[in-house]
Length: 363
Image (cartoon, rainbow, N blue to C red; front, side, top):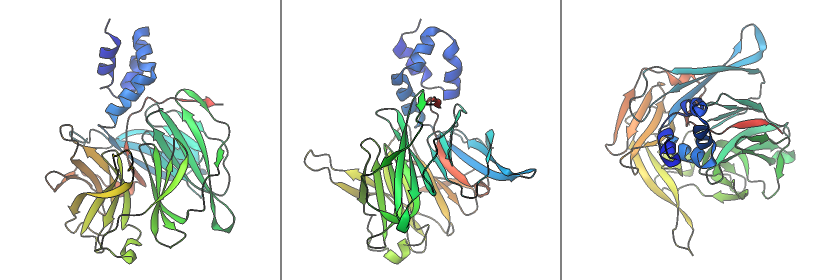
């Protein structure tokens, strides 16, 4: 019988779907796979080998009350991406005009339904405060928990926040908790991103009518405001263009991609923190500068995949206005075209990581 540490090392290199199938090999294997330590260990491995998930949605011709989601992936981004989309599965859901969609790691939150792409589990969430504005999911690595934040509308254009906590293989809570420790932080949300235990929103700041960032630390559930990176060559007017800034995750750090006024280049900043005990002040560092070679006036940065042998560099994943998949090598400073996809026909594109996180039933 293999020692538990060697077995864990071997199993951590396998996709989560295969790991789940191997639970039935023996009780020893089942116990090893089921431990919180192994699940965290497997997660650390999986984030270094992401897939690209694309999600399409359409209304059924024979049933206007039902919408179908088609979930597909492009696998092995780190080695040789698959030439064709790998269709995972489809979901039929109740059609609603106001669609609230969020994606994080392995979960899709669609209105009040939660889906795990790895296990294909689904679970209805508790009823929310209306009107719904949006859902955001965040993962807390230290505790192996997910938290879902729902932003809802209030009187006088104000917003409120409510939250639930998902624990591995545990009951889904029956109600949301209202977050009281916040001020009315913004009037309009442009985009959001979850990174390393926090959720970040790129917003229109209420006080000065400029773009800013609101951050929620999911562990202590505290809000704070962050200023956007400042560049003398970029005016505030150009930053107010919808696509002029995008939130990105680089090297497991929160970042902002800031485009020039004519979209000829993009500078990518990451938010770092002082390592001195008395100085934990956050500051922006320009990590990469990318020449866009007349790629057009619309594109999306989906994510960053680090190199195995060099974590300081990797490949930025771009989807330009022709719908192709481009990988930008930050070490060589060059683009590579991958496959013959047309990703613009899909409404959502995100990085996807295998996860052994198990949804329980409703509490």
